Image (cartoon, rainbow, N blue to C red; front, top):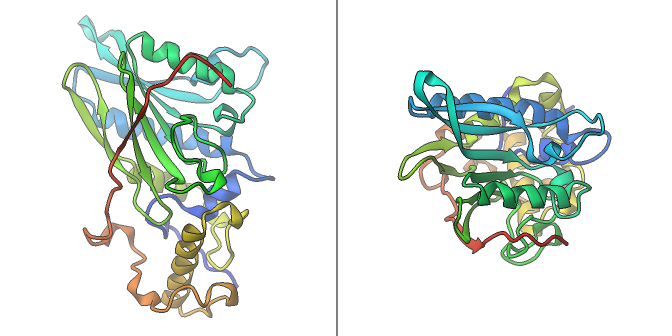
Length: 287
């Protein structure tokens, strides 16, 4: 008998859902379509009155004309006179497997991301795809279990600057809260956990995927440390539900009651955010 929930029982990215979406028979695009809309709604509500957010074709699809359904990105504009959109300020992209380093759209995406920043638009890339190599080759590769690597990240590239800023998160760790840069010294603050959790739970299909008695698909794609975090969380969920702990995870959590299942009431000590890491700027060359 499985264990299911109406809410995300992990702090941050749910590995059961996340792994399912990166492996057949499912598709990442189903999550992307929903999540980019929820991100847009969250960001648009946060913006000062002289800015607007709009959904526009994602960078990787701007170069394509093959009839493939276009995914969307978010562009923040400064408002002009009469509330008309005047100029693009910041672009937010939710990365797909196709525009990561080994993807079919990588070269086109790499070219457009450079052009975006060089045109004076800040770029934020949200990356939940732990099974593929990072776009920034200066970052340790989690998909290869390199030391110091992280499965989830937010990459911020400021317009005209040579350095970038990366916020990272582990399994069962809250996603970062970070500043979205606007013009000059203006910014708004986004807690990424809110739109992520909403996307996870708004869909009955997504909720049905998350059987907390079963290990995530492609479990070996997680690092050994994250595998133990997942098993510990699953043991805690089983204990809370008064359900037998599956044998393959029973040794992972000696004191499952130490894990709270309600992310909203995590203590401040548990809701830590990994500090941002400065990285090498992006370059025009592709590989």
